[in-house]
Image (cartoon, rainbow, N blue to C red; front, top):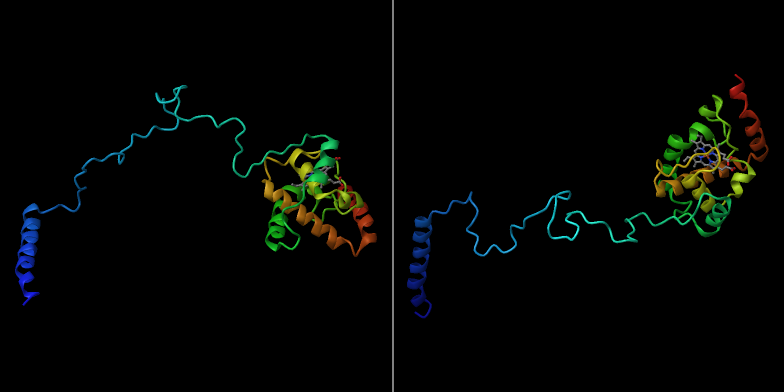
Length: 209
Ligand code: HEC
């Protein structure tokens, strides 16, 4: 009996809701009534439009002096031999030689941006050189083997003599990855040490054709 006495009020309530719902007949395709919408509709300024809320009247504000864009830490080196050597001492390749994906990416970057001059094997016999561009030294030679990763990064970033800067074409990570690839070319050429010198001599042959 105790539960039974709730049945009637409950039935009445359900009935009121049903009848009320039928009378109001809400249109579900329309927005509900906004009671105190607060900030639901904030007036947005387009980035290049005028804006009275800022002292300079512009919407797009300048970054705070000293702001560093994400992924672009400053490169505190000048295009001088001293700074190139300093980069060699201070910077290390963030990618280990065991990173197969990085190496693969390095190979791609090399074939796109470096091979034209340095040649597929790094011997310095690329197609551009075969058509008269001053040949770069072989990347398999002792000199290139001894250049530290950081100095190579400096060289790719700022250029050196006839080698232009590749900062605009090759992204930072890719510069390190291409260095990995150059190291792998050098490592592959190690067992055949005498042919390293041959490679530099054969490098001039194609241009003689
Ligand atoms: C336009 C031709 C050209 C292209 C393209 C080029 N280089 Fe070079 N590279 C040179 C020349 C020329 C030198 C010699 C610079 C010098 O005399 O100081 C050189 C030197 C180097 C050296 C130093 C070699 C040594 O023994 O001193 C490295 C390392 C190197 N380049 C890496 C690269 C990488 C990595 C790329 C691709 C991102 C690249 N280069 C693209 C022409 C080129």
